[in-house]
Length: 56
Image (cartoon, rainbow, N blue to C red; front, side, top):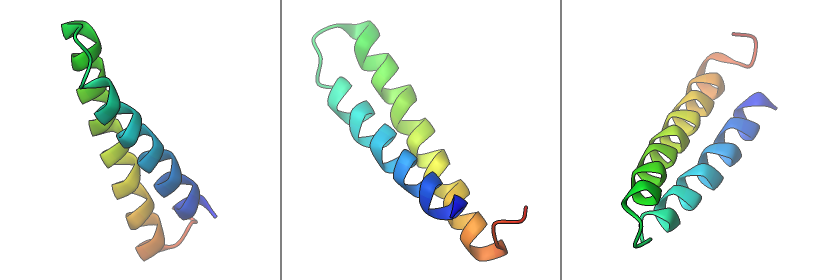
């Protein structure tokens, strides 16, 4: 179950980060880029959990 949860959280963070990058505020754009990268990391963590099992 952890695999799916991480992938979903990652997808949501990534989408929100991409949306924030379209802002006129440079601070919000930077926050969006960071959030997008966090999302990608969460998705990668989910893939690892899927490959190794949830017991890591």
